[in-house]
Length: 376
Length: 167
Image (tube, rainbow over all chains, first blue to last red):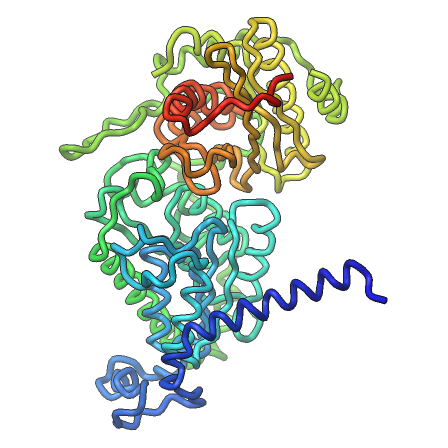
């Protein structure tokens, strides 16, 4: 006899199979054109070689080792207007592994058709599935890994970090993370994950009015992180937190999205090349230099500290902050949604603080509080 | 940006002190206590003032919250399920309050029934990290949203009164 659980498992299995088959079916009319996998990138100049134009980069003296791109793993977080085009570019470049991680509630919609990549017949499919499906067909040599979830929730975040840590082809950390998400919360989540893992990443985005965009390169520990130096603050001194998210009312253009995705992938390729050069230089210079380098590693003591810079713990019990509004020079037509709290504008909350209700947090247990809440 | 009545309501909700998200074990328990304390105080205040309008409870870890909120229009009580999760970047970023049954009925909503907090609430939250908590999000985020959206939805016939909602 089979138990209910077993039957449920079976149903799940079958459902997945049906889904797989229906996806395959959709492509059936074109599947006869699908090519077989190719083991080695060849530089042979024939019409049937999908890599001949890429390998020509070597002959032109641009890259020495283009085929190395097959060992590279890139995680793309968010497969919207920028992310999908980014993933397609990487796929066409023959990158080793592309991971698509997407917010759970995003499905392909007809409202997305003003942008590139997705097609009307894909409406209703989850963006990751639709994207992986198309991309796998374009280049069967690329490995795809898709996750269809919201990275900002607790459980998903742990899994997300785990996949960044051991998601490469060799089960090591991914080489690069590309954030192509459309909201501040998700950017902060990617920022947090990359900071904790020491993971190099690129942030990207398109403005609300669809006529400008940015990419930003971040190396945790070396460059200020996204939280400290959001691109908008750096570029135009507007607070990142005031950014609206896409969906309800943001404008978008295929042109801007394409430009941002192009800049992003171009820099990924450059970055890869740079890393290779660096590694080669290190290898060439290895041996003698190792000991020298070790001796140089001493505790850094600064001779002077003219500006009185020190580290401040911001993690707990933050009392009132005394930020002053900086003199902003905004270009015409741009306004800030709110001013940073100044002494005068913060009066209402300051008054609150002095009021205090004499509550001693240590006295009550969490269970008591929960029970009290229920009885209300 | 904030009117006098709201200011008064706000003034009676205790502010929070601990800046900790759900991934910081001990500090999060402390933060959670502060959240509950503020919420209890706020609900009590509402009851005393005769405008009790929501109930919330959470799972044991305090990461998932669910409950009911209601709106009274022409002496009829319209009740809605409310839920949200605490994002790992909390409290730097605010919670995203969801009213799943209203999804698709109003433009002031993101997918999954997340109410639009962008204009009227997110800036307030951003300048009050970490002092604002869930209670503040209810008072300044969901409260004003319901007050504006529900009468409109009722007038358009998108929300209708259900008999069994009555207690």
